[in-house]
Image 1 (cartoon, rainbow, N blue to C red):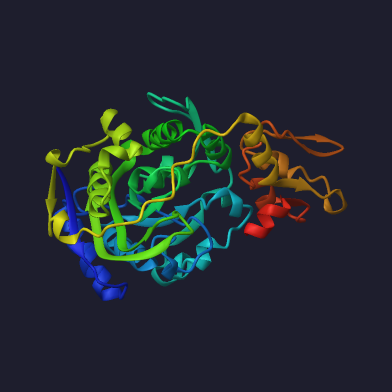
Image 2: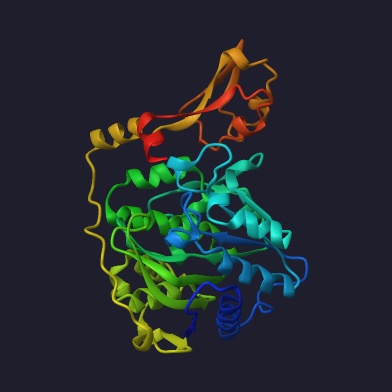
Length: 377
């Protein structure tokens, strides 16, 4: 039997969150079971976009802090990272500050970062048993972590109906991989690609702690309505946690294709009769959520190409500021930049990790955003 623990947490006051997270993690097996002294532990939060913690868009910093403190008590070295949605990516994204993660990192003395902000941030990695994606550009920090603790936010999602533990790892791959997954269009294909991404990190994901104190219903994952649940969920089995969480909000777990496909591949239990819930039963804490207006259907290829042209975020050289130092050439992890008097970017190879922008000493390698992206941003 897979174990999912549920702990009541009526609000985001730090003491209440700390107690609820501690109770949920203890019921799920405890932190000492998964962490050894000196382990580098990635806390993979959801930092989708620059949003206030109270907007229910991102994992609340109080939850991240409570988990980080438990990791440190167990002897681990926690750090928090994510890659915000690609529309908002580009150099140093303000999401980390806006959603309160930078402040908690400063308070605890732990690193908080965007995957793209490091040198050589993504590694081309083969997907074991990939169904839609044979290889992905995976975050080096996630691949090198000794342990990953997954910290999703309970929300609905226009493409997958529900977003939780499995989908949260989508933030640990490069923009190029995420675009490729979104181009699959169909709900089924996109959901399979999310499980492909999860498969890359699965051996390191040892625990999931879900922020379900306040969730989001309707047109999630960003523009829905906040919904109070007052819960923290935890499990070493992310599929079981997604199954239990979807039941809490009135969804059939087997209609959530990320849950069903992940279970089919042996990543966890999806059926309710294979899951033991510790703490209050699902029926006692259930809150009916409004579903998104509909799953996104296939887009004709011409529409996909138009969308790509409208939603542009990519590096661009300003020759007036370039001193031809070649640092951008040396810092590109996929060798997409070459010199021809000035740096030249191969758009087919570029994965839009923005290392060139981060490393450029003069600021000549700028981030180009289309008009629509600037409006959305």
